[in-house]
Image (cartoon, rainbow, N blue to C red):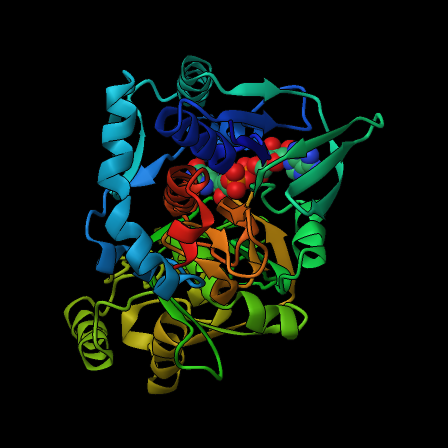
Length: 409
Ligand SMILES: Cc1cc2nc3c(=O)[nH]c(=O)nc-3n(C[C@H](O)[C@H](O)[C@H](O)COP(=O)(O)OP(=O)(O)OC[C@H]3O[C@@H](n4cnc5c(N)ncnc54)[C@H](O)[C@@H]3O)c2cc1C
């Protein structure tokens, strides 16, 4: 009987354990979790609702949401992708619903629904779940792996899957077992900006804006931007933070951000719109008559910043140019980052080229497997990070009991 140890009772560990136990009823699958309760991150995910996956059912389109891991995930998603996740949960009685932006949640809007489903499925499949067991050491033996726990217990296993998320111990063992760890840096954070244009605007959201890091054309994102007490957040900012995770880390989270509050209007069209209003309502207040699709409070703030007041008739060409600049090419100083509490992941982890993405097996250490956030894959917000955990967990679970010659020939 193959003895399989899965360290880490998060999304990836549970999915791998259930898949392995269902696929190989003759194997003994043990899922080991340090915390007293499993699936801690699932519990708090998506503001307590758990954004399980994303309604993007084409592998080629799906990989574009992953700043790291695109190439490796292409084949993996052709084997298990969001449609399979939806079907997997449906088969176990959990319906997912899709929101307008493509994010998928349990129909109950409760992350506990996902936790209950995973725990029940694991128990039904015969997975042995050890809660409150912190593994402190992992050693390769001639026939497998020896695991030691905090209280001094030791166990021998034939196969080992590391699904320890962003925990430092998992990276340490992977390294000790011969793997390279791509440097770990935060991803998905909001940008700290202290600026009079944003002061007192916390809570104001602009549905469609473009944010770009000055000096690098590739680092531009478009979408909703939210002004917070700290600076800027919202989907476009978070996407930018993910794509620029390494760049911003290297810069010490300092840099210049270019904001276009009206990316759907060309510069010429914007100028002519404003000039038309100036001609049509010369005696009307500029503050009270915003001619573009912008929250009123932001409009007033930008006008104050440009020191524009009074009636449209009094708007000089110089002030018009300044206003146009603020509407479409405003520059802001980034002073740091703060974590996005809704979904925060790490960029970096076990080097992708050292893992066989058909099986999630280590190409370096026979019998070792990886799944989830421990590998150098991370996605933008929207359910993509859990999808990585489901997909890589499923692939590992499918393969973990296969003989090596099947794996490596
Ligand atoms: C607040 C928050 C909200 C999020 N919301 C979403 C969302 O809605 N949608 C989405 O797609 N992504 C979301 N994410 C990201 C998502 O949670 C992660 O990508 C995902 O949990 C990774 O799964 P994992 O199983 O690889 O790791 P984890 O979920 O981190 O699980 C790893 C497990 O390993 C255990 N462990 C670690 N070391 C040891 C050890 N030495 N011994 C025993 N056990 C150990 C840990 O206790 C943990 O339970 C969110 C993240 C955060 C922080």
